Figure 1: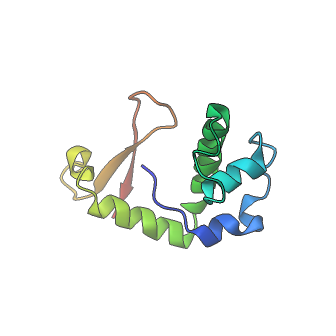
Figure 2: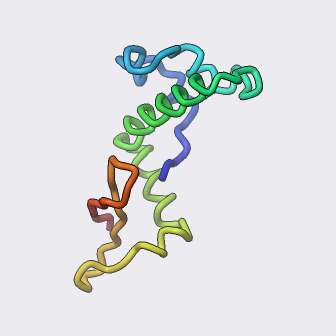
Length: 113
């Protein structure tokens, strides 16, 4: 579940520090994320996959900032799909969502108020 990362956060070079080494074609991927080039201009599926990876890395950094935490909280609390897997933990009223760094169903819960 991703929230929208603010454009100003992505454009700030400080927030991108160290990501150039993690993603091939960093500049092209960043241009694709910021809509400087359209998806039609980049028919390369490898570039699209690298751009998705870069956005995921940027998102991971963004959601630990104050603005990112607020954006994720608003997204999760207003999401209709959240109610499908949200339940109370032992009746104490804590909302719970699943988290996993894997693509299969091993879910590690954490709590939000």
